Every structure is written in C-alpha cells, then in structure tokens.
Amino acid sequence: MKRIEWDQYFMAQSFLLSSRSTCTRLSVGATIVRDKRIIAGGYNGSIAGGDHCIDKGCYVIDNHCVRTIHAEMNALLQCAKFGVPTEGAEIYVTHFPCLQCTKSIIQSGIKVIYYAEDYKNDSYAMELLEQAKVKVEKVPFDKSIFNFNVVNK
Image 1 (cartoon, rainbow, N blue to C red):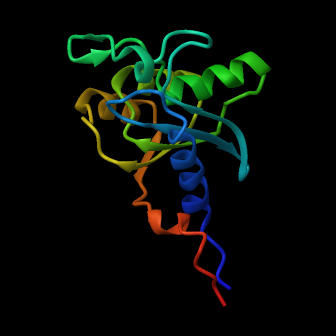
Image 2 (image 1 turned 135 degrees about the vertical axis):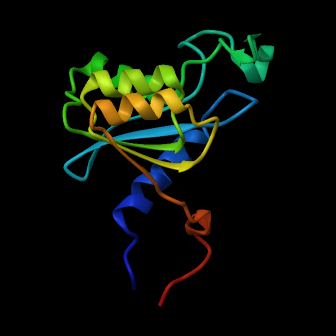
C-alpha cells in the first residue's frame, strides 16, 4: 500500500477543516505545520458564540463578508491563544490567502505557504511574500483521497 504524500496529507486536513466553515460564499481551511506535525488548524467562520452566515446570511461590505474570520487567521489566533510558536512553520491553505491574511502569515514567521486553489490572488500579496522570502507553492489536491470506501491492496 502506498502512503499518502505529506503535502496531500496536510492539504487533506485543510479541506477537512473547511467542511466546518459557516460561510455560505466560500469554505476555506488552514493547517499550520512545524516539523511534519500539525500545530493548529482553522476554518472561516464567525467569532465564538456569534451569528454565523449559515444562520443570518453574509454581512457583505465592499463585496467582502465581514462576519467571518478567515481560516488562516483562526489558525494563527489558535497558536497565539495557546502559546504555540509559528516561527519557521508552514501553512497549508485550501485557497490562496487574501492580502490581510498574507501579511499576518508573514508577520507570524511562517516560511512556506502551500495552497490548493487560486482565489483572487493578489499581486501585492505576492510582492510582499517575495520581499519576506516566504516560499509559495501551489499544491493541486486530489479530493478522491476522501473516498474511504476504496480499499487499497
């Protein structure tokens, strides 16, 4: 039996996390990894105990839902909340991070961003990532690995 590759394993975790998203516009998941170990995960959703898009609808300002916290931010905030350092870590995200998340990722000390799907890729975000020497790699994800009914022999 062939084992799943690391990048597919961590990206699968991000897609699994995205299934918890409460945003009706786009489901995003993020997994922060250091030394091949998951240190945090997040999905886009409202503040704890707050109204969710799935219940109240999206709260859109300038074509952007402001009700939710992005997956990358939720993962970074989880690290902050529990005192887990992110310096030198990697992040796996289902979609290319927005500009604000990109800046937070850079500031947190994360050194590599792996993403599966392009989504409004911001050219200034790419410029900042190059300046900060943060590696960015698109990792196409094979969603068929979620077919657990298939038995490999």
